[in-house]
Image (tube, rainbow, N blue to C red; front, side, top):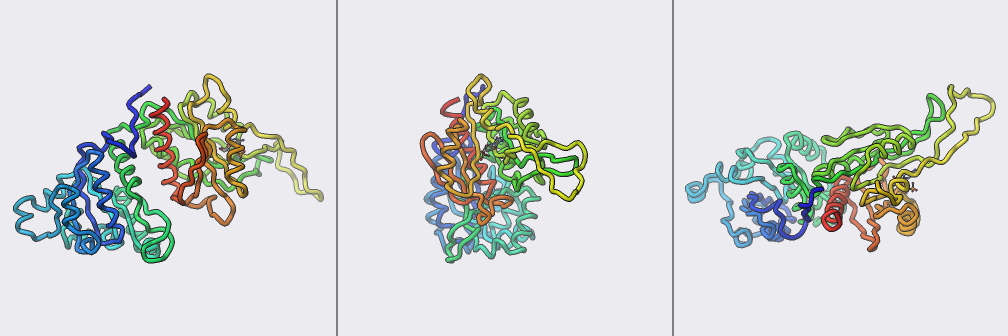
Length: 416
Ligand code: C5P
C-alpha cells in the first residue's frame, strides 16, 4: 500500500512545488481574490508571474501583483523594455501552466476566436503550455449561448475549466458566475499536476463506486426504475481516478458516458449490482451513490397481458448493498460512504441512516422536486461523519465529487 499521502489543499504540497504559473488577470471584480491566490500558491512552493490586462488594472494594481509574486508584473505587448528583457513568446513558454483568473466572457471569446490584441491574448495564442481558466461573470453573461458555445470550444481544445460556482454575484444578481474560490483553484491545479505526473494522493488505493438507478424487471418488457441520472456517482468515480485511485464503477442504466480510466461494470438490477460490488472487493474506499431500488418484482416469464383487472405485483426486498459492504469483516473497505436522498428531515434521517447501515460517512442531499437535484447538474449536500455535520454550498456535481475526493484523500492520509 502506498504511504506517500498528501493533503492537496493545505500546507506545502509537492504537487505545486517549483511549478511555474503564468497568471493572467483579466478585468473582473473577482480579480480582488487574486492577491490571496498568489499568496497561497507561493506558500505551496509555486512561482507566479503575472500578466495584468487593461481591464484587470481597474480591480488590482500591478504593484500589488508584483509585490506578492516577487516578479515583474507584465502589462504591455509593445513594451520595449519587456521585449528586450523577456519577449512575449518566451513569457508564454516559460511556465508549466497558464492560469486565467478571473477569466471574463471577453477573454474567453478572444481565446476562442484566436484574437491577439494585447499581451494576455497574445501569450495565450503563442503558448505551447496547458491552459486553465477560472471564469467569472454575471449569470446572464455566463449562461448566454455565445459564452456557452465558447466554453465548449475551449474544452475541446483541452482548456481546463475551474468553476464558476453559484451564489451572490457582485452585480447584485444571484446564480452561476462566481469565480471558483481560491482553495478550489489550488485544488484544480494540484489535480492537474497530479494527473500530469501520474500520481495523486490516492495512488495505490482502490475505490469502488456505485452509480445510477437500478431497473427491476416486472416482465420481459417492463421494469421499475427511479429518476437517478448517475451524474453524481460518475463524477465521483472520475474525481477519485484523477487523484490516482484505481476505480471500479458499478453502474445501473444511465445516459452518462463511461468515464475515462475507470473500470466499469454495467448492471441492471440491485442483485446484479451487489454481485458486481462483491466481485470488485477488496477495496479501500466504497462510495455508494447509486439509487438502488428497494424492491424487486417477482418477474413474470412472459409479458403480462392487459386484462380487465390490473395485476398485483409481488414485491420482495432488495439486498442493501451499502449495509452489506459496511458489515464488519475482513473485506470491509476502510472508508464506506453512503448517500441519503431525502425529501424531509434531511439531517436527522441521514444520521439515522449512517448508524443503521454502519457507514462511516453519509452525503445527505435534498431531492425534493424543487431542488432539481435528480437529473440536474448541481447539488447541495451535507457531509455527515462521526465528528458532525458539514454544510457544503450548492456546487456543480463535479465540484461536489472533487470536494468529496479531497476529503477522502485527507482521510486516507491520516488513517491508511
Ligand atoms: O435506504 P436508502 O435507500 O435511503 O439509503 C441510501 C444509501 O444506501 C445510498 O448510499 C444507496 O446507494 C445505498 N443503498 C444500497 N442498496 C440498497 C438501498 C440503498 O446500497 N438496496
